[in-house]
Length: 96
Image (cartoon, rainbow, N blue to C red):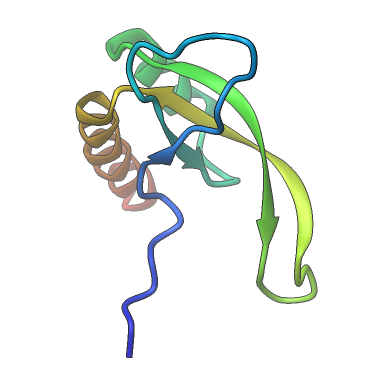
């Protein structure tokens, strides 16, 4: 059985038309419910942008619905650090 990819892993950003991309950028989806304070902290501590990204959702009664979600966009090595930081901050937030 194949391992299902986690939603929060960095994924390549959609290609941008009409311009050369010097380096490949990756998106890390921000799941609904992440506190604004954590999002703001990440944008101040890391070299990332917050972007809107359309994503199909496949759970509950939203089978295939397309929603606009927020994502952090940046270089892969930065996104991996952002992912670790985000998980640590969310764990602290949940355990309060």
